[in-house]
Image 1 (cartoon, rainbow, N blue to C red):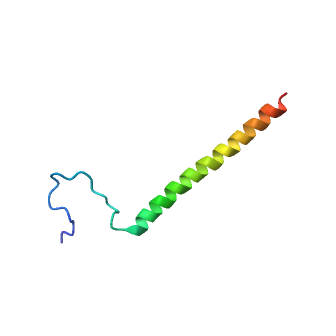
Image 2: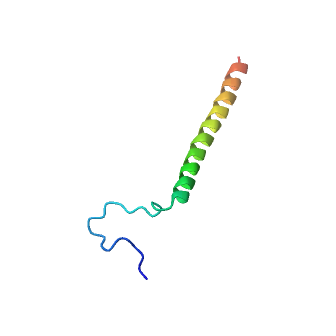
Image 3: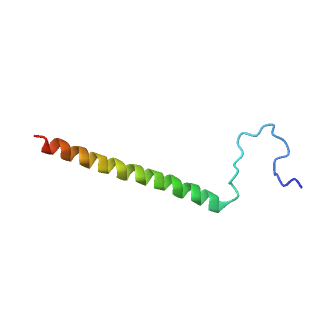
Length: 58
């Protein structure tokens, strides 16, 4: 049983595995947003701590 919509790989520019699965796309989007938010939060924490060290070193 061959359920692939691709019959030939000639002239195929891109093939998206999860294109027909909205749940997987939402999961990938949520993980990307979470990674960005966590990066921003960690950067803000680091900057706050670094600023306090510089401020109190005088």
